Amino acid sequence: MPPVWFITAASSGFGRAIALAALRRGHTVVATARNPSRLADLAAAGAHTLAFDVTSPLPAVRDLAAAVFAQHGRVDYLVNAAGYILEGAIEEASPEEVLASFDTNVFGAMRTIQAFLPHMRAQPVSAENGVRGAVATFGSLGSWRGAPSGGVYGMTKWACSALAETLAAELAPFQIKATVVEPGYFRTGFLNPSARVSTKARIEAYEDESTPTGMSRRRLAVTDGRQLGDVDKGAEVIVDALTGTGVASGKALPVRVVLGSDAEGVIRNKMAETGRILDEWSEVIRSTDAPLPN
Image (cartoon, rainbow, N blue to C red):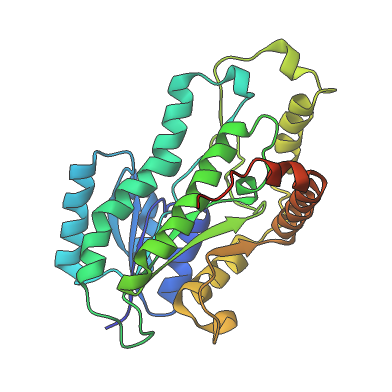
């Protein structure tokens, strides 16, 4: 039996590209989107398509998971690709906008994982790769570096990376792998005006292009369509990493799959910067330790 993929937000971006990459390998793909009519091309390519809104209540997601396992018997690769960017300064973001962003980017992934894991833990180990399955969430270079006008998005992406790191430890005894995909800027529709959500409140001080926030806003518009990353190349690496094939042959699935030289640069800079902070403040940091009890 070919391995089975369940992919959220498969109508565009990485979700769609991963679905197509898996289909090209002869795998079974369950592709989902809020509007299944946007999955017609994947259906034509052989995918099973379903309507699925990741913000649905947990009982509804559990019902969906049960139906998927009843039809396909197992899910080898659970990919949580749903997410969007809320553009706006921290001061401009309303509680409702922040909650909506977390509901899709973080809580949606959590609900999906919570609904599918009982079935994945119960399924047999795959004879092909010796594991029961793998779970992937999507972080970003924003998991490592907060950006003006992208603070809420960064908060959600840091959460997704923490979610994956935790899952990797929790699921290891059950022979289920977990990872977070942390791409840089890839040439998808993610930054298109139709896909990007901005805060309703706009404060004039942050519109000033001499401020970091103002510059960041203009940069997003200029970057759209000129991103460094190739989403099809990135999707092939993700499928290789999850399946342990191709460029990942002989390698263990890392807890983070970093994609794009821009993401690599951000992460290396953050590591070096953090190291300098620790070096400069090491005596102060250690001074707060309490003596061990006798």
